[in-house]
Length: 329
Image (cartoon, rainbow, N blue to C red; front, side, top):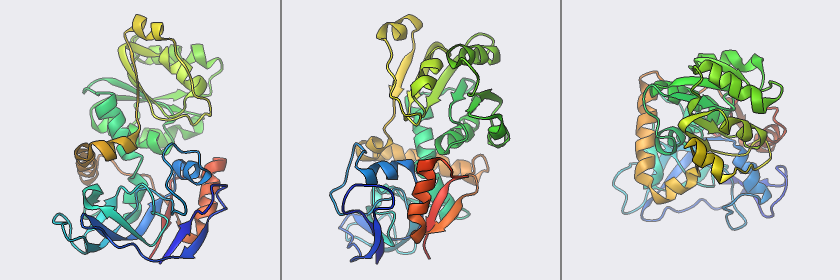
């Protein structure tokens, strides 16, 4: 089978497509013919050797592929050959075949395409855990999503709205407002405002009658985190998802105490490893919301497997115009 292989950590164009032996599923695994795999920023971190969990080399990158089951291990009873699934594999998505534990695979709704499934992986589940688990969202609360036009942000806007929240969407430019409004945002917050430390709190307080946001999702970090903490309501929760702005922020513990707020983090991979039953609950709800028309991924931009370096380069350079998905077959 063909697969992208990383022999040494490096730039996004350092791996190459090679012919390797197809994996053989263990007793608790299924073998999946990959049809679609989203390209994610985390793939760049893994390829460059900068991610917190690094596979032994050589390896094939790519998380969360979608495809059909072509073989099952001897102890697998929950899946059958021919089932269409989303596989929450930590690697091997940039290859034609992947062996994954059956417990990490989720049958797709009949109407969901492989491209849709792949484009939802890692972003909708991350957003679900940020809202349901870490943020403990209650119906009627106000959620402020920073980076709302990005993959996680777009998913969070849809999910928060479907869960009964009032959604404030932070965008880097007013030109992105229409897309996040279409996703369900009730109000738009322009994150390019001058003096963000003061102006962000003023804007959030204006939109919440002086209360602040009950939950803030932060995939950006840096100055955005510093400003967002000041926009939390009493007993509010800020969920740290990532540091796309480039700086890992710090906060003084006395501020957390005085405002009675929570700063919590989310590492989605840990839930897949430690609490797979919660991940199953997550995808059950996400797929239900998809089937009932309450969430739907934005149209993806597809490329063949040979376009992996181009796609990764677009993510690295922040020139991608949408979710990028590698397709096969």
